[in-house]
Length: 179
Image (cartoon, rainbow, N blue to C red; front, side, top):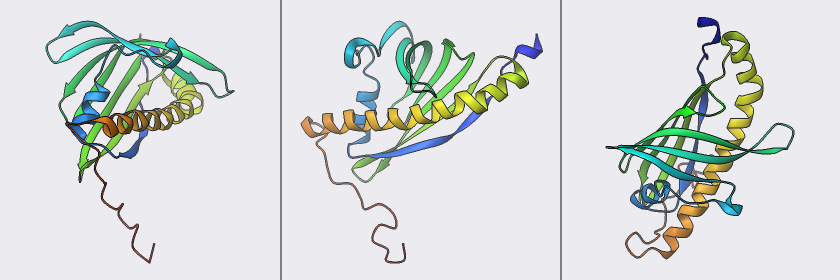
């Protein structure tokens, strides 16, 4: 039935700079099976199919009114080492979910971009709910999740002997007196 199809909503990409080698960042991001703090969040590999893995994620997301719910999603994850990780939702609260982590070299460091497209059932009404309720919640989650991943990766980089932490380049415009 066409009236229940989700209309795709593309969120603005969120970016962060990480003081760690891109290869190490990729390794940390693809360490599936880890439990998060308090055991509420984490991931579990359900099936492997070549370069793809079917992974169950448990993710705490804070709603608009401050209440945190743990959402379970099952997603196909395709890795393109060390540049990109693609996520395609199979089960979960959103009938359409496509996320992507893009990792770019930035000197001895990494620039990470988080891209997301989602959809809510209900065609036009679902699009409206998605834009007004779901999108602000997911944008906030994306920013928070990027900061958590940055902290985890940089912590690992400080201990790494294979990919030791190096200084990052000066951000563009940081030493420009006109800025």
